[in-house]
Length: 385
Image (tube, rainbow, N blue to C red):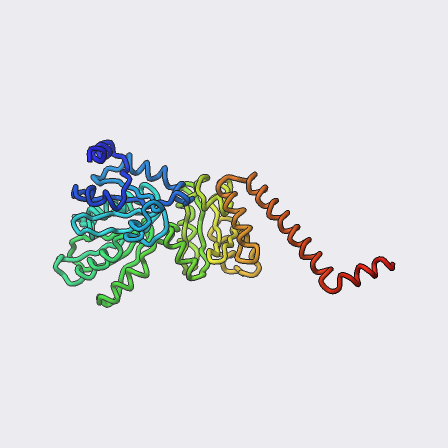
C-alpha cells in the first residue's frame, strides 16, 4: 500500500493487474491505463509518449499500465483491442472507456478532458467557441445550439455524445435563441445539419461526420481497412505545417472519400516498415492494408497533382511495394519486419540463409526428379555411352 501511494506522489505509472486493481481503484480517483505487450513494436514506440503523458499531465488521475502477456486474462476481460491500448476508468460508473484516437500526448489529454466533462462540454456563449476550437482543430467538433437543455433534441444529442465517448470527436452545447446543429470537420470548415430532427436522422448525421476532414490513422481504423479490404489514402507528415498543407489540399480537391494522416517518427515501426523518408515529406501514400501493399503518389504535392493522380488511379498499373500475400509473402514480411526494427545486417543474413535453404531444397528436389523414372536404366545407358 505504501508503495502505491509513493508512486502516486511522484506521478509514476503503477503496474496494474487483477490482484491490485480493487485496491487502487478504491481511492475513488479516475484511472488512465495503458495495456501493452512486450513483443509489440508499436508499444515500444509509444512508451516515450506514455512517459511524457504521465510526467506532465495536468489532470488528477491515476496512471497505470498492464503487461498483457503476464496478465492476459485481466486484459481480455476489459478490452479486445490491439496494443498499445489506452483506457479511462470511471470509478463513479465503474466502466472502462477505450480511447480510439491518435496516440499523442495532446490527443490523449483532450480525451481525458472529455471524460471529466462527460458527456457534453458546456460553453457559456459562442465567444468561447473559437478558443475551444483551437484545442480540437484536428478532430471533429459537434456544436448544438438550443434554447433549453430540457429540449428533446438535447436528449438525442446527449445520447450520441455518450455513444462516441471513446472517440476523438468532441461535443459542445451552447445555449442560444435558435436550435441548430453543426459539425466542424476542420478548424474553419463546418457543415450545418438540415435534417428532420428525428433521432435516426441526427444519429446518422453524427455517424457520417464522426471523422474530421483529415483524420488520424489509428489502430482501430487500420484494422477496419484490413477487414473491409478498401484502399487507405494517407498523408505522411512530419510537423504541423505539413499537416496544414495536406489539409488545404484535401479541402480543395473534389473527391468524396476519407483521407487520413500519420505523424512521421523515424523510430516508429509503421514508418520504418513502409520505408517512409523524412526528406520526402509531406507525401501521400495509397495503402492496401489487406494485401500488405503500398505506394507513394508520383505527382507533385499539390491539389492539382493529387487530384490528377487519384482520378487516373489504376490498381493494376500501380507500382506496389510490400510483401503482399503470395507464396513468399511471409519471407518478405519477415525481412520488412527486421528492417523496421533497425536490423538491416540481420535482415540480409536471414534472407541469405533462407535463399541457401531454398537452393538446397531445390537441388534435392531436382535430383529426386531425375532418378524417379528409372534410375537403373539411366545408369546403364550412361555407362554404354
